[in-house]
Figure 1 (cartoon, rainbow, N blue to C red):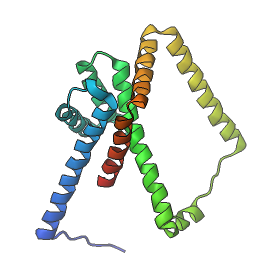
Figure 2 (figure 1 turned 45 degrees about the vertical axis):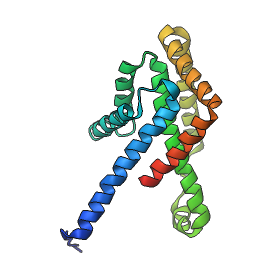
Figure 3 (figure 1 turned 45 degrees about the horizontal axis):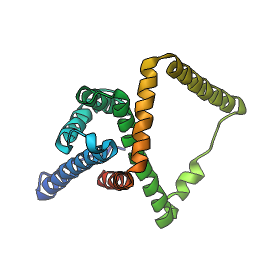
Length: 192
């Protein structure tokens, strides 16, 4: 069976395209604002961060999507800031706030419309043998051990680790920034 798709160039399409573009700009700008909240008072400014988000979004089209844009953002901001660990930590936290917001939306959706999850639950089957599970856990443990050894033996890795931990610790003490970063994460995921 062949389906024919036709596209009508009319006012509704123009309005939909305009709204989509506007929501994308809102999401990018709000993401940049969330990133400034994570970095705190030492941030270079919202417009600069928004520009980095736009550059990262562009590069996400060509680099691996999960890390491409984030890596470009981190490298660009690291040129502006001296503490690379802070920059890397801020990008990871920025991503974590987005994931946390998606989890909140998933839980809210499960409460509001549980019937939408029933077909997915019925079709989902875990096919993981005990040997595969043990292997996966072993690989994860090995990865953590290798990372710990790298951090322990490298002064640069220790400095990156300390800067990242300091960022997280500092954000924990700036409760207003912590709460606003999470709330902005909800706005960003809602816009998307």
